[in-house]
Image (cartoon, rainbow, N blue to C red; front, side):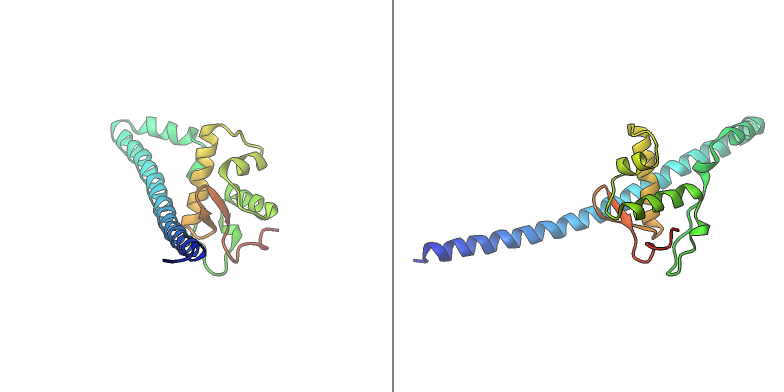
Length: 161
């Protein structure tokens, strides 16, 4: 029969293996979640564009008025980052987000980014910021090492100012 110390060591080893397995699963689920969220944002954008196109078929003057009223910051494109990022290619709203992240020096949640930018931290503002952050992750400007936590991608820090 194994000693109490050997049995405890065996249980500790089993628990450590389970923890590592769960960490691997969490990393996989986190990556899949980020991809699914990015896809959801793209689908929502496509739905809005489709509604505009369909409305144009019905009455082009209505669409023209809607386009004139919409917030231009909402429709800015975020370029994919290369190994030598040109921050001037990013819309100012996205550069502001990256500056906040660089100034903080640690991972941030969408709520913290909103607060640092002086925006409301209501659910709608946080979700809009989360969409921006996920877009920055998708385009290579940021990373999401943990669910809901965002930081600058390697090579982006130090280029803000």
